[in-house]
Amino acid sequence: MSRTEQVIERAMAAVAASRAIREAEARRRRETFQKIQIANQRKPNIPKGIQLSLDLH
Figure 1: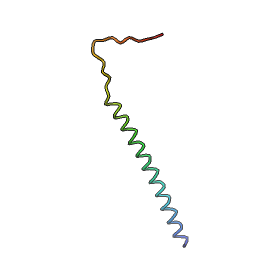
Figure 2 (figure 1 turned 180 degrees about the vertical axis):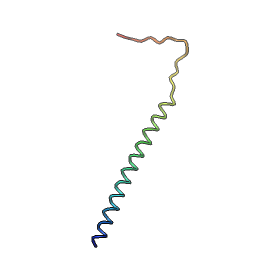
Figure 3 (figure 1 turned 90 degrees about the horizontal axis):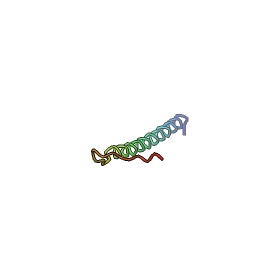
Figure 4 (figure 1 turned 45 degrees about the vertical axis):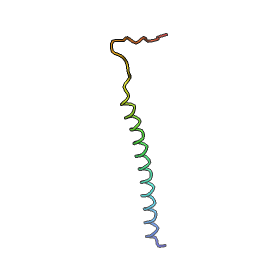
């Protein structure tokens, strides 16, 4: 294997590693934001006109 082929092989390996890291981060962000979206959709069911008691002890 010539020096040029070795350089190309290392560059391709670096690109593959970078792509794997980028895809893993994108997957993690997508899962995190899906959880946030679900949490934002839930609204507490508090009837209007009722005062909530706070236990401050």
